[in-house]
Image (cartoon, rainbow, N blue to C red; front, side, top):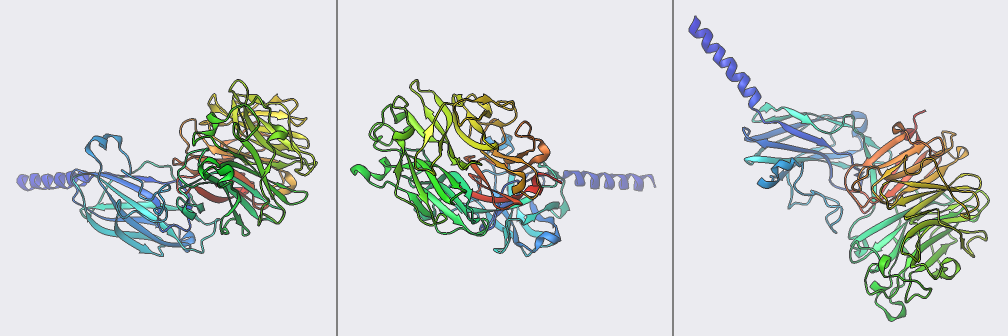
Length: 543
């Protein structure tokens, strides 16, 4: 009897050891835009160190049945192994399985980096991805892909939960390293790398016309993603359905081979756009860089006024809701000080004030080579433009909002790093006052940001709201977040924030109200050069 008992104890111990012997699967759920046009979007990353396990048999997910009707498929891919020297990094992927930056590789999994293992079409509820895939000795990477149906809307949301993973026929320990209750939001890649033969698209601007049309502007960077001076034109995409679809790209500003110089020495970029709400005329302002030998305009522009020595501030206008655009209008002589090295716009968007004054943010490098931010304005519907004094020195890319009738807030990129600078003017920039939130309330990694004022009568919540977007970090350009303030920008509570994209991108963004209920954002995301998303105000500010 004692012998039998001892034998049973050994068996039970063996079962317990076997249960513990299964390798742990580490899981990271993504928080990035799900692009409706993509065949593959990364939903989960899985990493396991196969010390004991030979085969991954299956992964089981739960998908909210109420949200599943918009899903085309869920797929499981194998992503290979990790180099020995990189294993201590404990990464979740050795490469980007879907590129946001390589032309022709932005819509589906790169077959060089991933092997299809399992497919579940039109999944709902408990979804099993069965594969029986042999494991490489050491680290193994898998990832789960989400594909939406073409009819999915920008308001579609998807919530999932990874229930279990089986290794060698046994349920494996699973450790999820990402936050719980992640909501996956839809997006549209308005511009992908390689579209229309262009290597890159950068510097978003976005407005809504009086007719409800969305006008998106950006740099068309044909040869690479580098700044002026290069072959760069201003591109424009137009949407009449709230951003769900976008018309063929237009080119409102292009200087081609002006002055017998190559197009790469005639680039025009860093656009800002506004709509004159009194007339529905749209204005684009941009920097034209001429004859600087393909060096960066920031350093190659010099004091003076002519296009052979200094950058030129140029505009184009549309009087037909953004369909066609005027020839370039050069306003450099109107507002540039000859001693300045460079004058250009704060990219993004401008505004029409309560009294009809048109305002664009600007930046300039003064005679001492220090950059400063301010505004330019027009009192005569864009015929002439003026500027006054800087808001704060050692600042660059800024955005402007009218927070009260006649009161302008300038939110600035500050080269000191760490946080945004904010100033107020009541006299169109003749004098400025530092806002109490300046260098305190809004962190940044030294990057462009967006700011818009939404008056109470113009939104469904009936509250005066400031909206802001940027990479919500002090290092890197990640965690693109929309924030709301109900106290004029003094505070930006965490409960009034929606994070859209946790991964690295170029980080620039621009906001506009699509309608009374919804804010739209065009930004340089981790999944597409120009990504558009729509967020309900009630997702930002709970009633």
